[in-house]
Length: 133
Image (cartoon, rainbow, N blue to C red; front, side, top):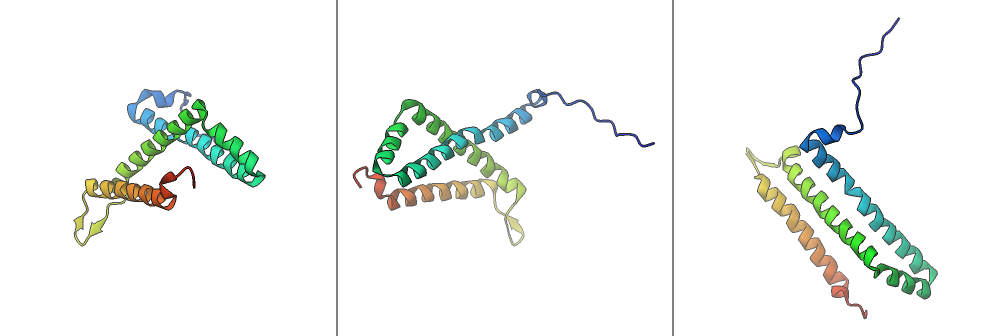
């Protein structure tokens, strides 16, 4: 007769007991506003395929205060997620040049510089978000 190994009970509130667990759950929860943002993008692609009237309706929908607020929350959530990832990266995958390891602050700064350069490049490619274009 085989016996099952002991499995201690795991309450649903396990993550509330330690600050590191709460931080982890907050980081994982950043996906929720991003799901709304992805839904907005998919709705926009659908509206674009339906013609000019549908596209104009989509643009009007995007300008509603609650849509702007949720998209702003999605932006903050993605920046928070990026920050936590960038801080963890040097610990998980330290970069070595010969016998020297790059300082964590340099790796984090380089990642944020990459984000900034990407935003600038997209801004330039989209013509500075010219509404008349």
